[in-house]
Length: 222
Image (tube, rainbow, N blue to C red; front, side):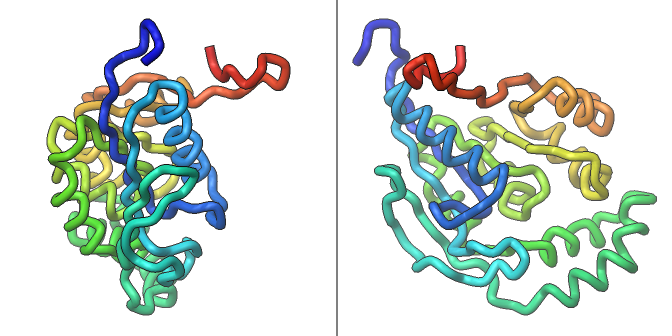
């Protein structure tokens, strides 16, 4: 261990999708953070995710089970095989405006399931594996594994919300998620301020991922 490094920690990252074939801002953030925590701090990192690649269908693509991505153990769990795109489109036209206008817990819960990924097996995996980790980091706030998973790990939960001003941000369910989470890490000050407008009691700090400088030898953020 290098002088000044903290003792090795065990950290789980929960992400809705994860892999080289996955394209997305939050998903790229999750992979980059996993690599940084492992390489720069020497922490033991594992990822819990679904078998999906496509965020529109959430169809199973990868094989379920344990694999390695960039040397990091990744546990994949089946996402729901139910056909949901037409139902979700109908929901967004009819029920989402109602859910945004006033608290509607049942409609919000339905939104979370229909939007996907809906993976009871991933939630079971979070519950079973949580005891092995010091912290469990969740990406992103609006996905079902996060909405349901944060409460499964208690004070180990850390939420990286990647929040935008969109309909689900204003759900009562989202406010409860933000205010129950022990720690939220926003990427920017505007994101922090946005979250505090909908959840004033949220415990939130700004901790962006940072950028490598091509001329600094890859030392990363300072």
